[in-house]
Length: 107
Image: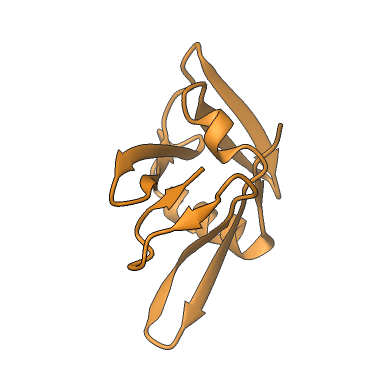
């Protein structure tokens, strides 16, 4: 089981964490939404719960709940800028389809 951050994504997470003393890493999860089933949820992790798994990638801890892990296992997270847009991009080997608007995915 693994979650990987590219160097660009790890750098962006470290920027988000700076000045937030309680942040210990990135929390990655999913929620049920949209026409395809799931959407990624990212936030700064401030604690590790009993059922969480913790991965380290490029010097950043990634915290994932037991419920989300089977859906995101093996995902690589990148950070990219295109023109005025920037954000995280997910390469999830478990994703079988995406909705037309790109907001949700199915497994």
